[in-house]
Length: 239
Image (tube, rainbow, N blue to C red; front, top):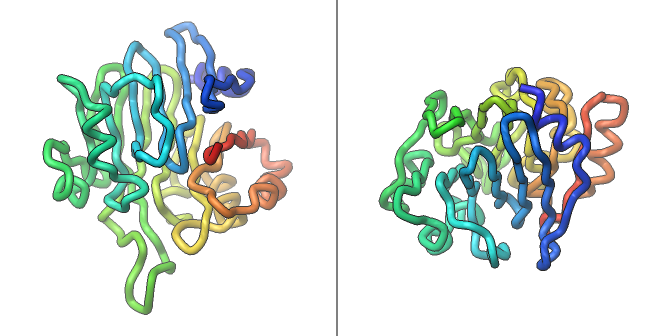
């Protein structure tokens, strides 16, 4: 359970020809690669499989492999891009997402908050992702409870948390044994840097990557995480 943690602690970011940030490493159970694509889009390669998360055509996918598994958190356009999903699919690709995604993307296998799915060496758990207070107007929220998913990807390399679009909800703060976390922080849709830092301190991942942070002061997040014992990994998601 410690190996993915060790890799990302020691691996210096590499860069592909398109200046795409990549964290590479090898473990006793095989190599692992994290590729930053854009905004909330990322790719994980391990166990000979490729996982794409929230693929969006605003990112640069040149030279990247097609997916064995695609995870979609919710139906907003910067997370659900049917054309990009179609480009990344190949025979046998599994697409997982909440019901709101399946309505717009035929072929999606629905996974709801609290459900798990085994995929090769991975256990995929869908966890809540929603707003507590922020929305476009009185009585409405940008991300209503139950519509979207975050994901916890568990394997012999540890547990990785992909938060999706969410505020610092109780379910996030109650997470356990998270090695690597990807936390959004931008207003008005998700969290402030301070809120994200407080959440991270609550559930205590070993490593946290800010993502979905356009226009956010990342220095404020780093300051709020000082002396937490949690390693903060800043990568350029808008290269």
